[in-house]
Structure formats: C-alpha cells, structure tokens
Length: 228
Image 1 (cartoon, rainbow, N blue to C red):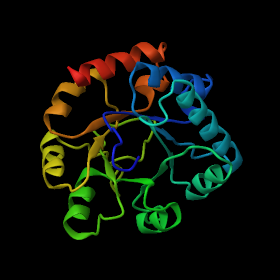
Image 2 (image 1 turned 90 degrees about the vertical axis):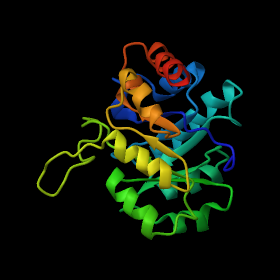
Image 3 (image 1 turned 120 degrees about the vertical axis):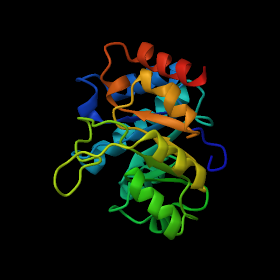
C-alpha cells in the first residue's frame, strides 16, 4: 500500500463531525462516491472506541472490495493503530502533526510498508522540507486553505490570528516537496480547480462530506470536479 496510495480525495472524520450519523455509513457513502483515503480523527474519544471506529471503517471499505485501493489511517494514535492491527483490523498507517509522536518512531513500530502522513501549516512544511529528514514520511497534509470550525487551531498564530495559505505557497510546496501533498482547511467544491492547478496531489475535507445533508452527493461532486 505504501507505494500506491491515492491522496486525490481524502476524508477526515470523527464522531463529532457527522451530526449523529454512524461514521461507518458516511465513510461507505464517500468511498462509494470515489473517495480514496480515510482518516479516523477522534480527539476526545478513548482508545477502545477509536479501535471500534477503525474496525467499522475497514469493514465498510472491505464490503465494497476496495481495501487494496482505499487507504485507512488513524490520526495521532499510534497505540490505536498497533492495537487494531493486533486484532486483525486492516489499518494502513497513522497521520501525525509536528507536535505528535515523531514519524521515525511511527515507522519503527509500524514497519516499512505502513503509510505515515505529517501535517502542519504550509509555511512550516516549507521549512521542514528544507531542513528535516523526510525519509520516514509518505505524504504531507498542508493548509489551512480557509479558517475552519472543525479544526479551529489550524493556522492560528500566537496572537490568535488565523493565517490561511495562498495558492502560491501551495505551488511552491508542491514544487519542492519530495512526497505528495494533500491540502485542506475549509475546502469546498469551488476551490478545487484552483487548488488542483497548484499541482498538489489531492484535497482533504471534513464537514464538506461528513456534515453534508447527503454525504454521497457531496462526495461525488467533489470527486467529479477534481478529476475534471
């Protein structure tokens, strides 16, 4: 999986994002509509429940016979990934931030075939690419493109100001990054043509699908526009 994952349509989802609907149902609709990557992000949920959510996600992906082409990762929780794998759940890796468990530690415990993503503000990633070892990382999550209520700290400076990232910065990150880049932060369908023109490999969304009245229709529109 590490050498063939597809970042083009990336869903980040947790219990707080679905308006009370089962996470597995929303994931199933997104995957059916063409989403290629799923991240379970449940910041205020205990490990056992995140394992259950990850298992449910893996099951609905498998039910569509897409386990080999849709990547499933867990945000931050290396312990959950290890425990889920021990229980036979097909989870492909972990996604961390710069203040979470270091990517090299994740690689040590998950092995050579796991997928490890790293997210940060675009400006920080530009610096990271220039000065840090990226050999343990498979992709970057960049942004925020817009301020977003699903991650209010994204792009926030020490003074409390939200700094979003320009298309020019994203173009530069794509140009110098040794790994693929996926961009999020309030991304909507109208953003996709300009975002794709930067050269980045994909977009990620939370509420645009998980919070939509009709998740399948919302996901299908995003996938269609990106590929057009």
